[in-house]
Length: 222
Image (tube, rainbow, N blue to C red):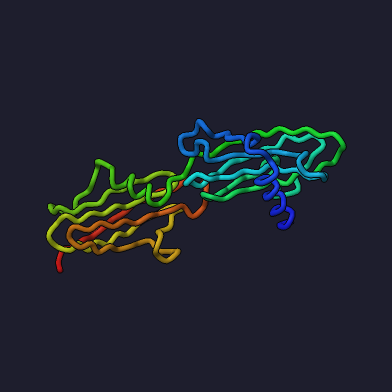
């Protein structure tokens, strides 16, 4: 099947004229004309067709597609009920392989483009730009917490004259700390004067709620 998928991807890129490419997300601010889709069941002299999606944007693309087929069936990838879930990284592509089961056929496609998830760098920038901050005592060092259903980010900045050491203990639901052991519930940071750092927490299970509570201690010194 992988060989067939590779051959059909090549056909979608080389045998279908560019004017047949559907830049269906042109009005989406995140993707614009950098994503296109080609659906075809006639270009190849065989009983196979395809739904090909190319993501040339700088962002990951997630979609749920529901092919509406008559005289055709999806043979790749495996359907999730009636749907196909796409998860295409920047620069990547995806193909759905169709096979005719009748001499005459027709097709349509319903789809939902999921809201774009912020990349780690974007999450840190969101945290950095928050107005609300918590200072470490009466010092010129602080942290900000950017908390959403998809991730939480601690952003730290030390504009004091001494090095900051801080330890955080967390009570979390459905979250894990990047860069720490899988079951870690605490982390520490050491930040020299004029420096910044961050910690990112991501969900353990997708599409489930998250929550976080914390307590922390800190000290300044060399």
